[in-house]
Length: 330
Ligand SMILES: Nc1ncnc2[nH]cnc12
Ligand SMILES: [Zn+2]
Image (tube, rainbow, N blue to C red; front, side):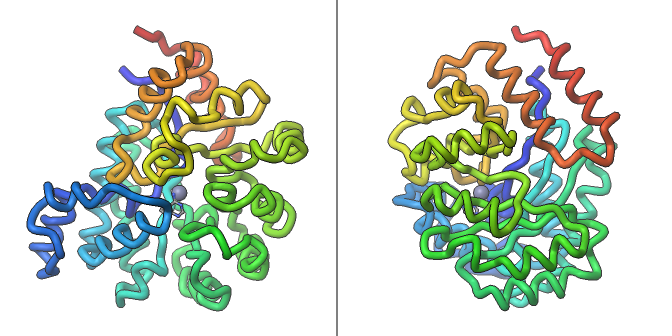
């Protein structure tokens, strides 16, 4: 059995395994520029975030129908359940699909079909977080929010992802204000490749409640103090940081130092089909590489439920937290 946990930083498009990509390509008559899954996997050697994003967006060409999105999400939930995930807050990138002529409704309703059955089928409660692509314009983000209005009952929060450097959070002030006015919660990727200043801006200008990644806060002791004092959750993704070369090796990851500094750290998988593991694999990898003990792992699991958007259902949060306390490591 796996340690019960919440996954708070997971791009559903990043769960597209090569086998499913080829199956969907065949079904939808999409020609992929790779002979087979093996050849595709050899392309998963990334230089940085952008080199990953280029492949990630290109492979999405196979996702066309509601059924495709349903299968994608259902496959993720099955894998997540097998690794102890009890609650998942799942990112999706509508602009990556609408740009290819796939309507936002196809994406949300397809994902929704899988999410509606998730609790019963996989034992996982779910939420959806709609991300704006920060390398697209602020106008495009506003249009995306507008297009999402018929589907807001399925969406809990907005996020900000894609190429970070050169696209500071402040660019999206207006759309975040509009999202908040619609009752959506707010998170943003910041400090993955971008500077600590982007983390401050995400907090001060966008008013986010969680920082996705936040790795580079460690360069700014004053910022660390603030994140600790305000208990701002960081959704760290250690395997992603290695694969996208934010750090050299997992042994170099600052997770241990971040926890010691009192930061509210969570551990997540980001894009598990591309980065070598789902969230249970990620817990295992950091345990080995950083020598985390059982209480540190339990703290990470506890943090994941504390940081989850479960305020409307404190009973559920308490139940999940009691599962963490009751978990017996083998
Ligand atoms: N790690 C990451 N950073 C920014 N945007 C992303 N989209 C998918 N994965 C991402
Ligand atoms: Zn991410």
